[in-house]
Amino acid sequence: MDNHEITMEKIVSLCKRRGFVFQSSEIYGGQAGAWDYGPLGIELKKNIQNAWWKEMTQLHDNIVGLDAAIFMHPRTWEASGHVANFSDPLVDCKDCKMRFRADDESQISKENVEKRICPKCGGELTPPRSFNLMFKTHIGPAEDTASILYLRPETAQGIYVNYKNIIQSNRMKIPFGIAQVGKAFRNEIVTKNFIFRTCEFEQMEMQFFVKPGDDDKFFEYWRGQRWEFYKKYGIRENKLRWYHHEKLAHYAKDAYDIEYEFPMGFSELEGIHNRTNFDLTKHTEYSGKDMSYIDQDNGNEKYIPYIIETSAGLTRNVLMFMCDAYEEQNLAKAGEPEDYRTVLHFHPKIAPVTVAVLPLMKKDGLAELAKDIQNELKEEFVTDYDQAGAIGKRYRRQDEVGTPFCVTVDYDSKEDNTVTLRFRDSMEQVRIPRSELTARIKQEIKNYKRV
Ligand code: GAP
Image (tube, rainbow, N blue to C red; front, side, top):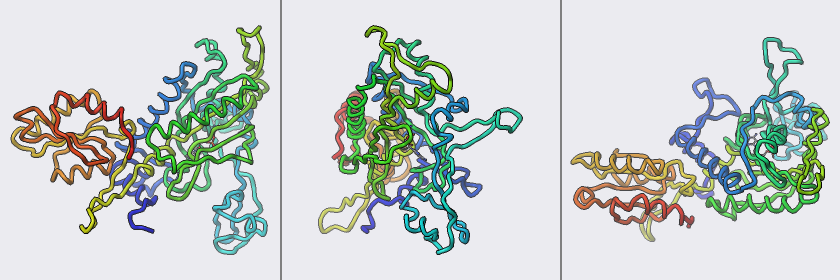
């Protein structure tokens, strides 16, 4: 492998070094399956969430938002099928105590499962047993079955149980959607590949309610929309592909994943599912409340809507945007010694910091002038200020965290009120009046195309 290819180790190291993602409870040796987002990580995560929210609610007249509680009535999870079906088949090695998901060939082959041979030590495996992925807890002082609560394993159910409230309060008419971003929890047996698969994670889900019979059409529509979203935010299309599920989840009629080529290979980024009327039918059955829709524009026709779901991992998207942006770029011309910079080519709307302001020198009033310019830019953009070290090194530090624009303030700036605007990807620089800075950066963001 070329030394300058992307690896997960490099991403993990950059994330820690520059304050994107830290191991949870690191001082105690870390907590498996949980990660903390640092100052740049939280900006990046919020930007991805905002881009998704804009796309999925504000750009559609017929989609509204919701923020439902993580704790839901435990009957919810009986109705949804999660209590009975949301489990992985596990096998344990009686000798080395390793645990494997029997249905995951990246962990263990079918042959090993059948012959009950541990792939690690050759020891004897237990037969597969079902392991439910939902975290259970208790509410109130008594830890009995009446007090059981589950941490939600998907945000979707909060939408389904509120769908009638939203129809009534917001006068929604089918077809319409409800979007939600929030935490979800799964007791994943194997948490690996950094923030790809964790026990605590965030989802961005949109549930689109349609008339039965219109579901295939809207399924195709949302597949197209979700693919375009990633393109719009600069993700390289050759790193994306579709995966069509043959074995479907208990609620689905059809399902596709958008996969991204992570350093460990193509893996699921987002699922688009035709969930039919499964969930609403089950909630009608379990709650005793009729979840049918009455179409007042069509002679009060009554039916339980079908649901098309788009379900993306927000934290998994953070990893994907990091991986897609990462490049170690050799800046040397032919015949010169190698000179690498690490650069994150984030779309400017996704980058944690949009503009960094750098005074050429700290002295002679340049720092004060640069601070004044930064304060002006703060109203419009997320900014950073850096006066430490040589200017070339400061540019590299900004490149490494994906800041698309740097503004350099020098002695001429004091004389003629101009500044240097430097572009991360091309490293080109232009001299412009300070008064044009905000408008020019806005224009550059609007016209941004990844080269
Ligand atoms: N409501 C449907 C649903 O939850 P899913 O395919 O199980 O479907 C949807 O999950 C998305 O949530 C996945 O594509 C992935 O991006 C994210 N996701 C699922 N489990 C995850 C985990 N353990 N860690 C991080 N992200 C996860």
